[in-house]
Amino acid sequence: GRGVMKYYESGAALAADMGVPLSVLEETHEAHYQAAKKTEKDPNGGSWPAYPSGKSWDEPSGKTGSGKKFYHNVIPGSQVKTEPFYVAIITPVIHYCMGGLEINTDSAVVNKNGQAIAGLYAAGEIAGGVHGNNRLGGNSLLDCVVFGRVAAKAACKYMFGDKNQFRSCPPPREIKDLVK
Image 1 (cartoon, rainbow, N blue to C red):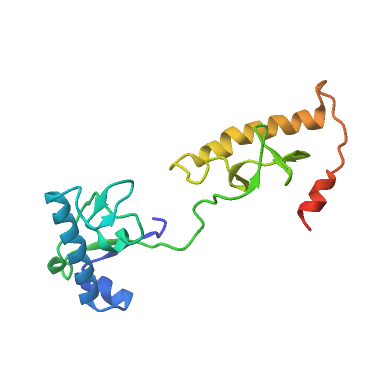
Image 2 (image 1 turned 180 degrees about the vertical axis):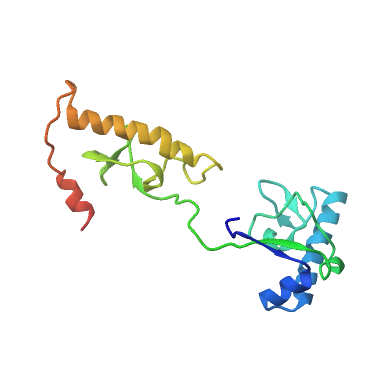
């Protein structure tokens, strides 16, 4: 495999590899298990905000405003010691960037006055504001595919003109202003 998953024959082995007492894993699993059981009895209850809406019994993630409402493969803390685990190795990465250069409908970057900077186009995560203040999962493809095509078409029109004849275009003076 690619080495992103690791198998542990037991929770005790996982705790040892993590360098934490087994009791930490047992207590964490037990809290999660109890939240799942409460959710079975009262799916709309709980003290914590749930994602995408409603309330949750899940205190750890509920404090962040994204409490769980759905639970899978939940085991009580008492089973952690002997239960096998498959653990995903996770490293910090940037998942998605919501900010970026402001663009217009032709993917032209606009200056601080809202005017298009001739010859400067952006698409993908470098372009901000396409999704407002929250992006729906999977919609980053729109940034790349749709606005990538829009930017390419507009850039070709800028480079070749309406008559499809290539012309040398100097870098716009606004680019120098952007790097100050």
